[in-house]
Structure formats: structure tokens, C-alpha cells
Length: 175
Image (cartoon, rainbow, N blue to C red):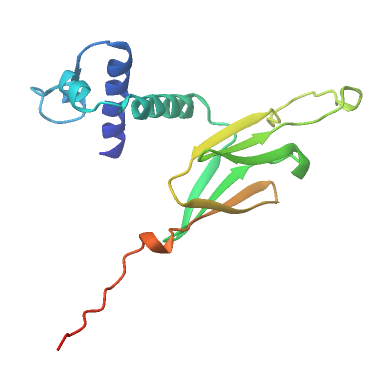
């Protein structure tokens, strides 16, 4: 159901942003062919959510067209995540990991001198430059990044401030 909800949100964002087709036929996503979802009501009720819709639109459109390099996102524990990206053929100094404004950006830029470029008879390995972006949720902190056996591993931990954690209040009896 999550992918279907995402498709509806993306279509709503396009409708909201460009004013295209004021209703979405959600019969493709449900078994009920009589459902039409009117986005005009949402546009009136969700003031200021256009930025959220723009983010959905941009993020999912880019993910559908760009699949290089391949990656995995692993949930190691409740608050620890690991992003593993295939960077075979890239050296440590050719990979850049950067965080800015809650956005994790991984760039790979191959540096091969023209004079040392080999003549390929067949080239099946893709050593092209890349840029991969991940939006981090609140309180997510990148702990470390390391390359081993052609895989870049980035560990991310959720560190919620103690003031935001649930706590027990001791009840005292007053006499």
C-alpha cells in the first residue's frame, strides 16, 4: 500500500503545483472503480504543503531514472542504519560524503589522466561519475563512512535528545 500512497501523493503534488487535472482517479490503486479523489479540498486544507509535494516529486522522479550506483539501506538496530553503495573502481580520494541541511550527498568523481586512459576492446564496467542524495530525518547523525572491497558503508544513528525521550515522573505522597 505504501507505493500506491506514494503514487497518489506524487500525482497530487503535480496537480497542486501545476493545476493539472483537479481530480485523481484512485481506482487504479483500489478495487473500487467509483472512487475519485478531489485534490481541490486538499489544496484548500493543506496550506504550505507544496514544499512537501515538491520534495516527493523531485525525489521519486530522480530515483526512478537514476539507479547508478546500486545501494542498500540496512536497519542494523532500532536506531542504527547502514547505507552500502557499490563504488568498485573508485579510490578513497575520489569519493566525497557530505551533509548539508539534512541532506546526505555522496559523490564519486573518477580521476583518470588522459595519457593513461586504456584502449578498451569491451567496456562493461561503469566507472562514470555519480551523485546520490538521501534526505535524513530529524536527529539522524552520520557516524562514519568507510570503503572496503569496493563498497562504501555509511553508518547513520538516530540520536534523540534526552529532553525529547519519554520519561517517568515520580509521584510523591504529600502528608
